[in-house]
Length: 341
Image (cartoon, rainbow, N blue to C red):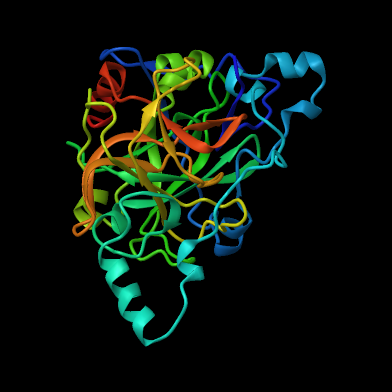
């Protein structure tokens, strides 16, 4: 099997890989949940957020063979940080100035390209409020990834990658906090700490990439529910494959710095390696974009679409394609459990 490169959370977990005793199995399908320990209100300072690293930078190959064998499959498959990722810089930075170009730039902002492997999202709309950064701690190290607020019964639900919530068969994240609408350090809607976390059973037991989806019910903020404040993207299940899709996130590995919302767009395809049921999208976003929403039926004018996947991993022999899990019955069960929390 060709090794995959998780974009977040490949922290080396030598102990505790069989999981914590406070796991609960949901009565709806194969769902595992966890009561989150609240982060201190002063934990995520601007300085600590700036120092948070996108997981994927840690190299498990430095572990002794016995410890390496104990890692979850997705962590064992991770590559060193200097894996030669081929990435494209922010395309907006290369646009020439001038009167004519300024007019074209404004038009481009209103009608962003429907096919791109990575550029800054400058068109505004709902997606700039519902998408945000996640800050979390795994095995004592502070990390970042991406996530989206979704419409749900409890009005408090965030969808991200499973490895942004739990390290496969290893530990659950701590100090988990969602910052919707993050932009260059600004937190216009505040920060929402986790109260309950949910992953599918196959992810919790073995880090199966087909199930790399995590859902987190967050606390309200001063009595206001998350989606009442920022809105939420609808979530869809069993979507038709190969539909044009927009993927969003906050990549934090060079040449990106995690401070701005970027996107990819195109028509996804099946996994040519035949190792997963995931779909692949040409996308140069780097570590830190993990968990970012994939929206199909997306309307660039309003910034709204149907959430049908999240950024999950890249294969080591194809750094320009991002893969996202298919939202089938298992993810539906995950959502039905999480939105009741």
